Amino acid sequence: MVDIAYYIMISIVTFCFGLLVSFQLTHIHYVRRLTRLARRSVDTGTIAPILVELEAAQKGKKE
Image (cartoon, rainbow, N blue to C red):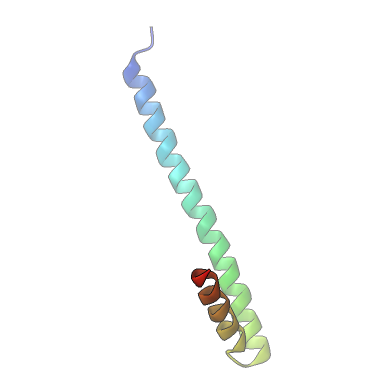
């Protein structure tokens, strides 16, 4: 018979694994976004793309 402690241990390990995977996916998403933004900034030779992103982020927070 399977003890309840085994179910609890499996649940904790699964939860921790889910946290790690979600953190990695979020990190990859934002690194790609930052890389794309930096590439646009270098291509144009100005910081205008960064300023546009900042303004868009501030408008998103206000709404």
